[in-house]
Image (cartoon, rainbow, N blue to C red):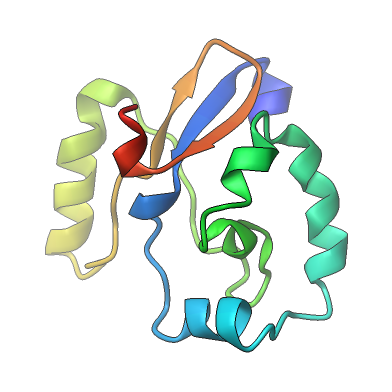
Length: 115
């Protein structure tokens, strides 16, 4: 999505809504989908992979188990209202996980990184 638009993204790994048990399966039990290796080729878009690898949720952004979930971009001025509306109609896990930026690539970070 960002490559085709010639923009980048900042992705807060702490903000990702995760299914119960997802981290346990990947991090502790090392259980990965058979399709995970094919999806890992997309990691070349991550501009700071060395630091992103330290976050336990990082492998989950490549996991196909949930068909990738739904990711949408909404203008910053409408983002909070969009999330609020989605939650009101039953999508309780709707949230803001990052932002589109002018720089190329995807920069992953944690809430504690001060970004």
